[in-house]
Length: 192
Length: 291
Image 1 (cartoon, each protein chain N blue to C red):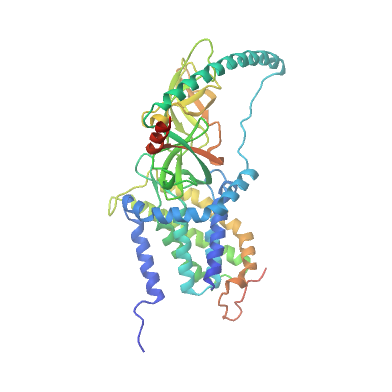
Image 2: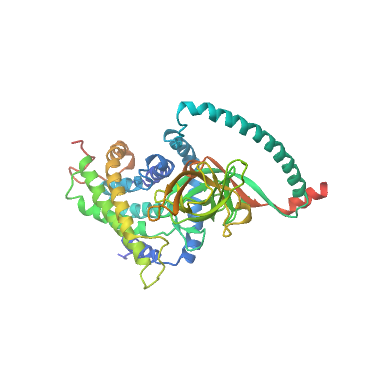
């Protein structure tokens, strides 16, 4: 994979995701993750190791973008880790799904749904573990795992829905990514 | 043939373990560790984010509150009342100008004060549990954590974290926010009245709610201004919102009321804000010397 092009697309995707957040938001707290869609797109085509490095980068960027309420009266902080781990596990899941789903738009969209499920579950688990009495016992202010699971369920559906046009657009740029498509019958997706 | 000690797969495994450990780091360490990369990322994104944010606001503008003017026959009476108010406001404006002149004279003798730093909003974020604005000013502009952010006379929030060229504001509509306010009429009417209330942000983050007494002299249209000891002096008196609904309390409808206070401006759709930053003492001394 051509990493320079991947970084440029990541920059544009992150800018669009954050810059248009007030346009894309539904019901004040349901937002899509364009970075995750990009990650899944890469996961479908790129080699195994490249996929996991790309997912790690996208996860760290997602963590850096969204602050968490701190313990002080006004402080906030970013917790790098939950999304990074979630994206890596999601990337691993996407690699397993390569043999199940075809490289078609419906196949990639289905992969987005499954990967998103893994990511959201891991993030909620990681945040919840912080609040356990052992080993760190640093619960997040106002954190409710149940509320987050409900909110993230809608985010998952929204991301999956939005992945249809995004995957279509990314498919147009596939040649510029220079994926290694040496496997027979696996070059490019087909519109079905 | 020599085997490489650290392959890409080893690196991935190491990164995965590090990220797992990073999830469990205490807040103080995490803040020190990730503050610089976070603000660097925001700085790098701001050139593209800002126009997209503005475009986003243009396409999906905040909903303006619907004003119910009542039956048409009352409009004439309202018009006459408003004309009277207008005359009264003109008089108050003259008095206010005189007061401003006095305050300006007082300020010249103060050793230190705060100045208002205009800041461009590059991003508004609804995060996991906290609503924030990202500003295009940082520590190089003397911005520090805890400083008050306003838009005009409207309270916006406080600086939550500061990078070199960017900073984030924790908005007052963040879930779990509680504010003590005084509620007064927007103009001085014949019978001066004031009530105190404790505001709690609603679940959707758009309005505040407070419980009041049925005998409280509060009317729809009254303004709520900050009167909270936990906030800096410079924030006291800034407007939090306007009373838009007064409903009977669900549990004790005969004794208590439920007030709804709506911010005058949508906090998630601001283009520019003002930050109260400490005035540079050296500049003040220089000014004093010149005078």
